[in-house]
Image 1 (cartoon, rainbow, N blue to C red):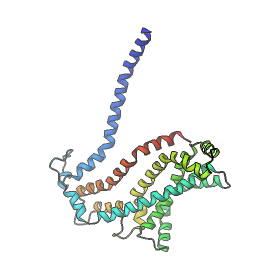
Image 2: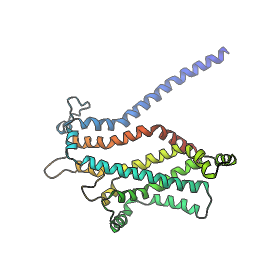
Image 3: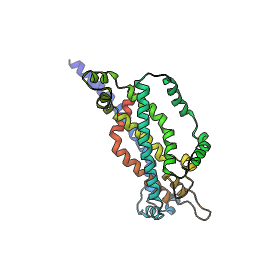
Image 4: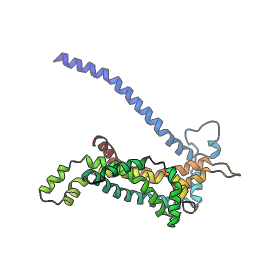
Length: 290
């Protein structure tokens, strides 16, 4: 027994340095990953003169909120924020609804054309977005939906739904149908069995899919650039472009660009704080379920 314990102690001592080494590697990777975010926030507190100097400033000592004040002084941030929030909420709601119904259909039912529907989802994902710009513009112009929240939301929903269906399909297929059958034996209808037994188990998958839809709608730039041509109707990515484009008489103020970028990132951070627990379990669940 003492020999076995001695061997276990020696093995633990051998493995301990390896764990420390991997921990150090993890910390280094995390610091590399978070450094751009830190640099963005740090630069947003520094003047443009400081940012353009040859010596980098890693700590915002003596910094100020002037860049943020200049961003708000333009009076265009909150309209752009409101438009982005409205579009993102519409896209998330309808994408989850359509993707949920589509994933349920191809996972729980066998019907004619099922394989063709699945192949169509994969084929749509392979289409380059740039090849659809002209058709999308003409479609929105023909129904008078240019420069509108509804027009952009429809295009975003059409682009995001196929992948969210494919994502949710794995979650639905990973929940045994026998759970619903057992509930039906106990007297529940098929609909009651699904919403009482299966639907709560799909919550992580719905959250993970909602996060994907939200990020796609929040960060999308090219489709909005084509459809939203009125300067008064812009999403946050289009609004941010205005700080990067320098006029003939004024150079780009990188301090204001970083301040604007920080403001664009704050709603995403808040959203992740609310859903991070469900999102993590959803991603892990989707990785191990078929």
